Amino acid sequence: MENFIFSLNVTIPIFLVMVLGWGLKQRGMLNDDFVAAANKFNFNVTLPVLLFRDISSVDIRAVFDLEYVLFCAAASSVCFWLIWGGTKLFLKDKSMTGAFVQASFRSSAAVMGLAFIQNLYGQSAMGPLMIIGAVPLYNIYSVIVLTFEGAAEEKEANSDKIRKALRNVLKNPIIISIFLGLLASFFEIDFPTVMDKTVANVAQMATPLALISLGAGYEGRKALAKIKPSFAAAFIKLVVQPALFVPAAAVMGFTGEKMIGILIMLASPTTPSCYIMAKNMKNDGTLTASIVVMTTLLASFTLTGWIFLLKTMGYI
Image (cartoon, rainbow, N blue to C red; front, side, top):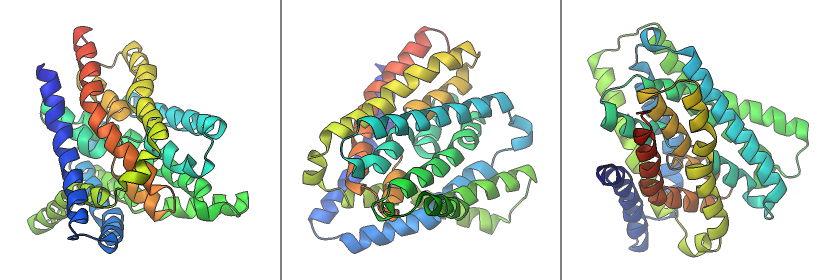
């Protein structure tokens, strides 16, 4: 029961902020122009600053664990390619492919993931290490699938799509921020207090603004028409991925903070930044928002079950 309440305390407030955004839109306080501007601001400014802050604050030389980082990278990669392949085979509406694949494999590792780890273990170095192994690939793979499957890209040749995907990866602000954060951590750059506080203030805007804009942009009637693919994506995200890779992590000997980091990477709700990227890259924002909402609601139950199972078996 304690684990269930803990999970609710993490997921329900996030869901309620999305509901607030939706309610403000219905009352006319927010409009589509706000949603578009907020999504662009989040994608280019607040989310990159959040990731830079989290990674640059870790002593990467002291805590780096290559085996753990490689496992996170390998698990993320296998999940992505399996889901994309399966989606190409089984999803009938091909216009949903990019949004479905991204929202099915990409977790809220940097936001909700760190919250879970810190609640269980306090300040932990394993959370940022998991971010280093998974989040850059989340963004690279998301850019690739959204570029290849976006509505505006259908008539382009494959060579043009590849070049465009490479350009999008290289100029992706989230990927750039992770790289800069690693450099700052590795070289132990000590920023002035005024800069640290400025970065912290901007980073704190990322999650609430993303959730408000997601709620404000949520199109309920259209989302209900896509309830089946939303549920399928949620099942893959919250049940199938951890069922495949948590046992593999146990076989490799990962326990405690490392196991929780892997579980969060695989089984936490879909990150709100999926919605921002899908909208910015001309993919299905309605389906993405629906999957984010559904995984956020269901994660309080599924994550509780996974945590209970791992505690019972002595892995955490």
